[in-house]
Amino acid sequence: MSVSTKKQGVSYTSMISGQAKNVAAQAGPVAMNARMLATQQAVPLARNVGTSVRQSADSAVAWATPYVGAARHWAAPWLEQSAIAVSENLAPKISDALRTAAQKIDYVEPKRHRISKTTILAGSLLVTVIGAAAALSLRSRNGNGTGYTADSPMATSPDAATSPGSINDGYGPDDPNKPDSEGNGHQTIV
Image 1: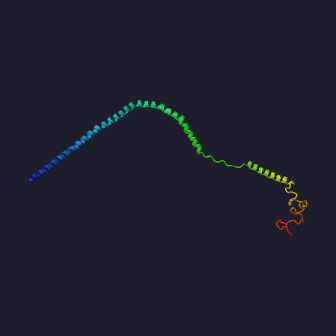
Image 2: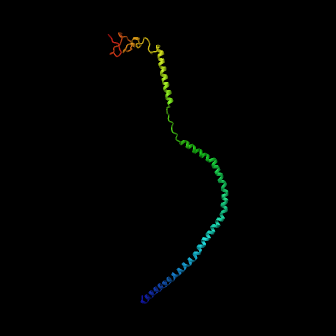
Image 3: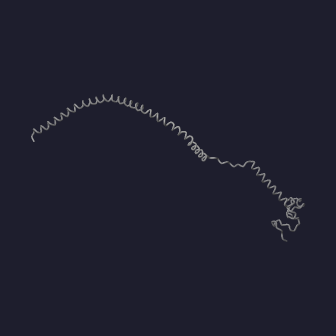
């Protein structure tokens, strides 16, 4: 390889490098012009888009308004019939179910079973009457009104009842059948 070919390679590279620098220098202002041109066109376009969107929305509302009115006119009687059906048919059933549930869960305090004074007085009077009737029955059964018969060892003698400090046991003072005081009521065998 000769020295002259090397020079050509270097000069060719520097030439391309110079052209790239020129293109880059020209691209900066071209890009700036493109940006300014896009900005100048975008602002009115954005304004036009806002206006056109607003006009489109207004026209959509104008188109939909009669259909919405017709739908509301059709739906209103159905809603009213539904409300009547619910209030006449469903609401009473729900109300009854709620009342039944309320009655089932309601807590009723148990009543206190107090015995009134009248009941206590009547019971006491009844016990007294029954006791008096039993006593009268025993007296009339024995015949002398004392509850003892004449041949009973417990029958009273007039002199035993009148002597002071004597026990009415049915025996005379000198009766040989009289139980010993230490014999616990049994007769003493002599």
